[in-house]
Length: 325
Image (cartoon, rainbow, N blue to C red; front, side):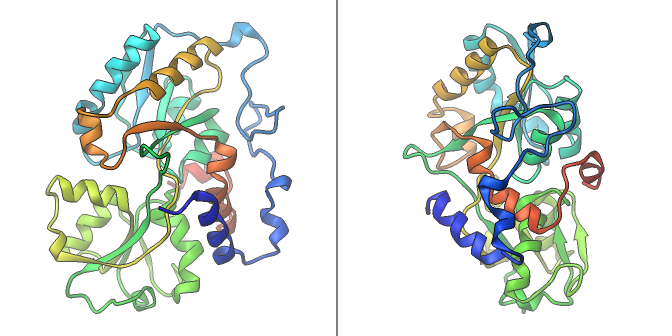
């Protein structure tokens, strides 16, 4: 798997439509909501200076990114939640979220303390809800990521991205990286402009996009490889019925975050729980194949390429932008 820095260079070349200075990291400043500050320039919300505003709740609420069947994922996450309880000394409650916007709002309102946010919604969580990304699932050698893949039916006449012109194409949701933002940034160089050469239909999720392609409701769909892999492993579709038209180099996957206003001691304990968790022999390890541990990341570095894509699409991290999801 290519390193993220190599991929970032290649992707930047692919999507740069304006002056390169617009994407320079040293010119980038935080786009945080007015209730947050970023004195250290790491692009995420600082902890409150007033110690009385720091939180140390008895029960921690944890959420994983919206999925088709939250009940299944609550069971899958149980071994990790038990480990999190043991390390932090807190009770931990799994919170099943129905949408990216609901997950961001839950952290913004203080009801959610730890969360896994999908790639595209992560910047919304950072800027609107004070989420602080610190970990990502990775392999033993520290590699991580997923690909944007375009699927169609096995017998479709779509052979390349340009063939999607005039077809029924499903994107997932406006804030999704691989399901919407990256296609809008990358597809023009591949021969089609979404909403110009084909009408975008939002399916609501990667699962629904994929199942819609299998059923013939859509002619093709850009989806996240990791979701498709898990669906195939659970037997939700027959891989022989579909084929890949095109795929990207890897993107960073789900970011694991905590609320900015937790006490330093609690943040340390949460990080210890993540980085000491052993995936081997657990349902979590079986669900996320190729993953063996959580590895440390920063929003400023690992989400740089995602912010570049979103800037190319004119994304603004506002409640209105999130509500469009």
